[in-house]
Length: 145
Image (tube, rainbow, N blue to C red):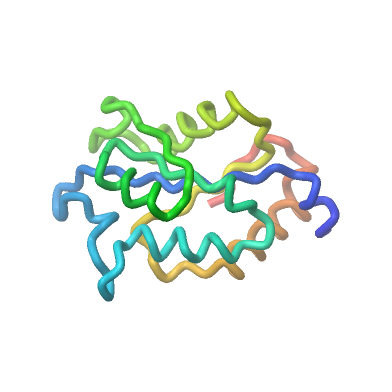
């Protein structure tokens, strides 16, 4: 299984919209003094199955993009029409995947929540292993939540 994963180009997209009805730019709100999105990005550095160069933040907010760039990840400026309350997260992820695909072939796109600072890389590595071992080669196009 690990050999199968080595041959795949896996990207992580972290959608981080600036607008929030309850808490503006919540994705960079400090949690224990650290922007929430930074917890997620820092944990991504520990992933075994995703190269750090394949981590992307998709945002409409220049502040979120600036924080993310300082942490060394790629950023995709999301169009305003994909940042409205009515837009599904998957639309923003698909936009990011199309942008990423302009420069390189991506086999799998993983979407992580910027406002989930307790996510652990070991859990995502296990999820990727499960996905590749049980689903990816059996059904090329699928979404797992």
